[in-house]
Length: 159
Image (cartoon, rainbow, N blue to C red; front, side, top):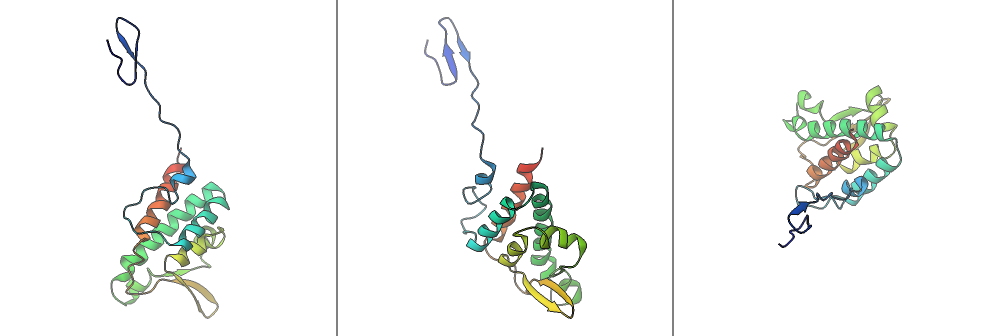
């Protein structure tokens, strides 16, 4: 009798031995080695800011930050692109003094750079500083891949 892959031939009958895949490196899995949804390469600026964010902050802060940034980016590139009216514009404007935004972006090392690399621009109006996403811009061709990277990082951290 010939033993098949995953089995041991002990003479009379083969015994199945399960194989276990080796553990994956979560950081490597969530960076450029991870397959993305398309072949469009992610910008160097985003990759650098992403690495700074995941290596320079507590995991919980990064997961929270990525969740909020993803929501802001999706809203800016979808709901924020429905014309140039006030309803649409509110999805493209992020007040950095807002407590939740300050905690998730301003106080997380690298997070502001991620937002800037994705198309947001710093704008000052009076005494306030905002992140403003341009009207009539659906985002860079690689943005879906970047959003996926942030989402996958959050999933990899769930217990």
